[in-house]
Amino acid sequence: MSVMLSSYGKKKRYLVHRLVASAFIENPGNLPEINHKDEDKSNNHVENLEWCTHEYNNQYGTKQQRGHEKQSKAVKQIKDGKVIAVYSISHGGCKKKRAEHRAAFLAAVVAS
View 1 (cartoon, rainbow, N blue to C red):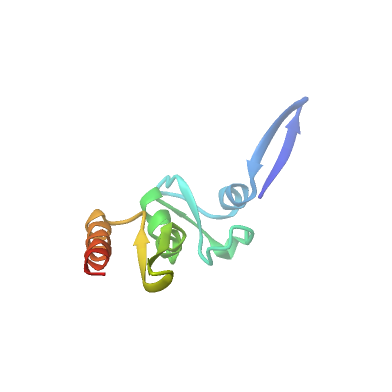
View 2 (view 1 turned 90 degrees about the vertical axis):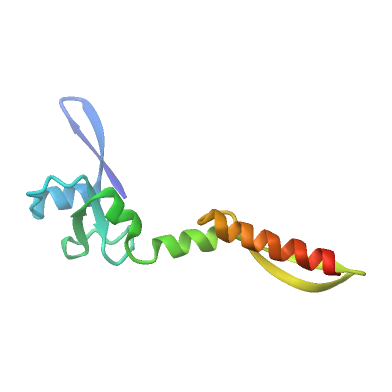
Protein backbone atom coordinates (compact mmCIF):
# COMPACT_ATOMS: atom_id res chain seq x y z
CA MET A 1 0.00 0.00 0.00
CA SER A 2 1.40 3.40 -0.88
CA VAL A 3 0.52 7.06 -0.75
CA MET A 4 1.55 9.94 -2.99
CA LEU A 5 2.75 13.03 -1.14
CA SER A 6 3.77 16.31 -2.68
CA SER A 7 5.81 19.27 -1.56
CA TYR A 8 6.34 22.40 -3.65
CA GLY A 9 4.92 20.65 -6.70
CA LYS A 10 7.21 17.60 -6.42
CA LYS A 11 5.36 14.31 -5.96
CA LYS A 12 6.85 11.26 -4.30
CA ARG A 13 5.39 7.82 -3.61
CA TYR A 14 5.86 6.38 -0.09
CA LEU A 15 5.09 2.91 1.23
CA VAL A 16 2.69 3.18 4.17
CA HIS A 17 4.39 0.50 6.27
CA ARG A 18 7.71 2.35 5.92
CA LEU A 19 6.14 5.66 6.99
CA VAL A 20 4.52 4.03 10.03
CA ALA A 21 7.72 2.21 11.07
CA SER A 22 9.86 5.31 10.56
CA ALA A 23 7.54 7.41 12.68
CA PHE A 24 6.75 5.00 15.51
CA ILE A 25 9.36 2.20 15.75
CA GLU A 26 12.92 2.83 16.87
CA ASN A 27 15.60 1.40 14.61
CA PRO A 28 18.88 1.71 16.56
CA GLY A 29 20.50 -1.05 14.47
CA ASN A 30 19.66 0.84 11.26
CA LEU A 31 17.95 -2.27 9.85
CA PRO A 32 16.89 -1.85 6.21
CA GLU A 33 13.55 -3.69 5.92
CA ILE A 34 10.19 -3.90 7.64
CA ASN A 35 8.48 -7.20 8.37
CA HIS A 36 4.71 -7.63 8.68
CA LYS A 37 4.46 -10.02 11.63
CA ASP A 38 1.10 -11.46 10.55
CA GLU A 39 2.31 -11.66 6.91
CA ASP A 40 -0.63 -9.49 5.79
CA LYS A 41 0.87 -6.69 3.68
CA SER A 42 -2.29 -4.61 4.09
CA ASN A 43 -2.02 -4.60 7.90
CA ASN A 44 0.17 -1.56 8.53
CA HIS A 45 -0.62 -1.15 12.25
CA VAL A 46 2.49 -0.34 14.27
CA GLU A 47 2.00 -3.48 16.43
CA ASN A 48 2.28 -5.62 13.28
CA LEU A 49 5.54 -4.12 12.02
CA GLU A 50 9.18 -4.66 12.96
CA TRP A 51 12.53 -3.56 11.51
CA CYS A 52 14.62 -6.47 10.23
CA THR A 53 17.31 -7.65 7.85
CA HIS A 54 16.57 -8.87 4.33
CA GLU A 55 17.52 -12.43 5.34
CA TYR A 56 15.15 -12.41 8.34
CA ASN A 57 12.31 -10.99 6.24
CA ASN A 58 12.70 -13.74 3.63
CA GLN A 59 12.86 -16.52 6.24
CA TYR A 60 9.95 -15.26 8.34
CA GLY A 61 6.80 -17.31 8.89
CA THR A 62 5.37 -19.29 6.00
CA LYS A 63 6.88 -17.24 3.16
CA GLN A 64 9.22 -19.99 2.01
CA GLN A 65 6.54 -22.67 2.25
CA ARG A 66 4.11 -20.55 0.24
CA GLY A 67 6.83 -19.93 -2.35
CA HIS A 68 7.50 -23.65 -2.73
CA GLU A 69 3.79 -24.38 -3.07
CA LYS A 70 3.56 -21.87 -5.92
CA GLN A 71 6.56 -23.46 -7.65
CA SER A 72 5.59 -27.12 -7.44
CA LYS A 73 3.71 -28.81 -10.25
CA ALA A 74 1.81 -32.06 -10.42
CA VAL A 75 2.97 -34.40 -13.17
CA LYS A 76 0.69 -37.26 -14.16
CA GLN A 77 1.99 -40.53 -15.55
CA ILE A 78 -0.47 -41.87 -18.09
CA LYS A 79 -0.52 -45.35 -19.59
CA ASP A 80 -3.14 -46.50 -22.06
CA GLY A 81 -5.13 -43.33 -21.42
CA LYS A 82 -5.30 -43.87 -17.64
CA VAL A 83 -3.47 -41.97 -14.90
CA ILE A 84 -1.29 -44.53 -13.13
CA ALA A 85 0.77 -42.16 -10.92
CA VAL A 86 0.99 -38.52 -9.90
CA TYR A 87 4.28 -36.85 -8.94
CA SER A 88 4.94 -33.47 -7.38
CA ILE A 89 7.84 -31.81 -9.17
CA SER A 90 9.36 -28.76 -7.48
CA HIS A 91 10.82 -26.05 -9.69
CA GLY A 92 12.34 -24.22 -6.75
CA GLY A 93 14.25 -25.11 -3.64
CA CYS A 94 16.91 -27.75 -3.37
CA LYS A 95 18.47 -29.16 -6.55
CA LYS A 96 18.94 -32.52 -4.83
CA LYS A 97 15.19 -32.77 -4.20
CA ARG A 98 14.46 -31.94 -7.82
CA ALA A 99 16.93 -34.62 -8.90
CA GLU A 100 15.26 -37.15 -6.56
CA HIS A 101 11.81 -36.28 -7.94
CA ARG A 102 13.09 -36.52 -11.51
CA ALA A 103 14.80 -39.88 -10.81
CA ALA A 104 11.62 -41.30 -9.21
CA PHE A 105 9.55 -40.08 -12.13
CA LEU A 106 11.91 -41.54 -14.72
CA ALA A 107 12.12 -44.86 -12.83
CA ALA A 108 8.32 -45.07 -12.82
CA VAL A 109 8.15 -44.30 -16.53
CA VAL A 110 10.73 -46.98 -17.36
CA ALA A 111 8.93 -49.52 -15.13
CA SER A 112 5.60 -49.02 -16.86
